Image 1 (cartoon, rainbow over the protein chains, first blue to last red):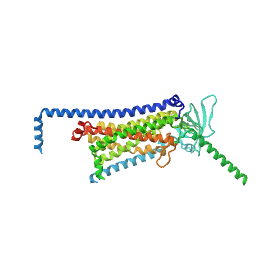
Image 2 (cartoon, rainbow over the protein chains, first blue to last red):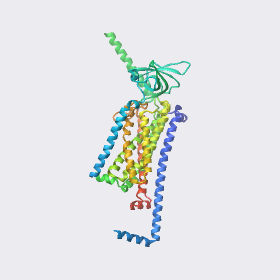
Image 3 (tube, rainbow over the protein chains, first blue to last red):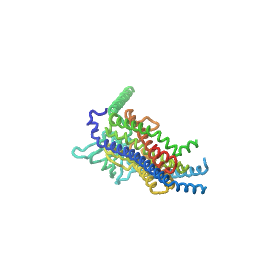
Image 4 (cartoon, one colour):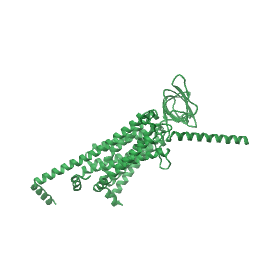
Length: 77
Length: 159
Length: 247
């Protein structure tokens, strides 16, 4: 340990405000970026899942329409 | 590699090379303006303009700092070990200001060749070390000087 | 060799690899970064000249280092985008630019806060600081340009050209302290020489640089995965993956 006491560690011989301000801003921005990216990823995954489920529901509810749609696709080839 | 890709790659390389050359020439032409400060040799050679706000940078000469006793006025010389310039300043100096330390002063050069500064910044080098190591280094370097002096003295007495 | 290169461009293949590596990147990154920062803050000796304010170096140097190497990676990816039209390269440039912006801002901010007690000023227009500010604008410009163009392909090409043009700034940042008179000191770490600081100072610095590098890897994988899912949501493999709840 380079400091004699915890209060000396906080004060850093008068340079405390500078040092701690840097570390605080760094921690907030880095953790913020990581948490935000992670939440955004989960939100995108969830909204995709919802959309797929909706599609599945609509196709199973109207099977006839799906069949005609497939036939059109085949005839185009 | 596909010929189209090869062509694209050549274009990209030419683009980067062209910009690099353009920027290189520009920065070379502007090099004096990009320099933050004039060093004492340039000022002594008369390359620095008189009575224009400029910066001067170098080391504070050992033993040159003279502080006024009842004001914040201070006089010192800035050197690059080839030439030196006298500096006049009134105000609070940064904590790192000391003899043998680097400084960059902002101000005007007057007609007597004295640099009248209104701001003094400290410049430090890229070396970091614990205080004990710095002390030990200083002691050993002083020791070296002493032994060199002793040798010189011995030489002069021998001849 | 080319086969591997093209495989690398496959979003599906990348997705699998990224998912496998991400927990490791995160865990080791956090451990190294925390070890480096705690060591640097509490255990490394103070500097003989600057006292304790030099402890800002343990975040200033890693963020500045990452800010520049992210840009170099983006420029390499931009070449791949322009020459090979590889989707994944474009995804990389787009998703990583905001991370580079944050790191550049952090290095400027910590540098300013460090400059006040040591130099006596927050900011000075010397070559190093100014070229670093230009890097911040380049990141901002790349992000803004990407947002401004709606068509995905044209946006990718425009951003790639901008990023590539800006790459000349990187050697200027690196050598600014040697080519011109600056207030900023030359680099403490050089590839060819021993660092000009003792072991108990450069080891924690190295740990935090490595830790931040790994965390950047984690961030890049995560953000690229998000972008891939958004772009490829019509494909069967993304559908299967999302429905199975993997990734």
